[in-house]
Amino acid sequence: MKKSVLLVAVMLSASVAFSQSTLKGPKAKNATPSERVAHASPIKFKVEPAAVQGPEAKNKKVWESEKVETKTVYVRREQPLKGPKAKNKKVWED
Image (tube, rainbow, N blue to C red; front, top):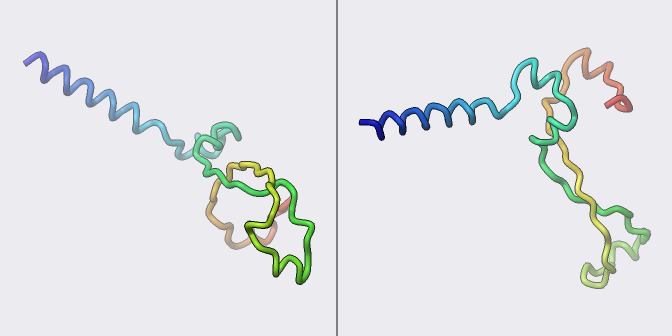
């Protein structure tokens, strides 16, 4: 009997702890950037773009390229803006 009560108590406390891990509502709106990064997906890109252009770039073989340093950036996907908010969006203030 004691084991079953203990098991139910552990399951209830675990469900409460895991249900509060995601940000929702005003907490998500007022979250700091460090809190938002916790839910972001990583994207890798090359630090320096290729200097080759034109037909040389088109005919360049992948296995002949030199090693390039990559950098990881975390990106959040947000819902696209609609209406006046999309019209008046200032891209440089993101």
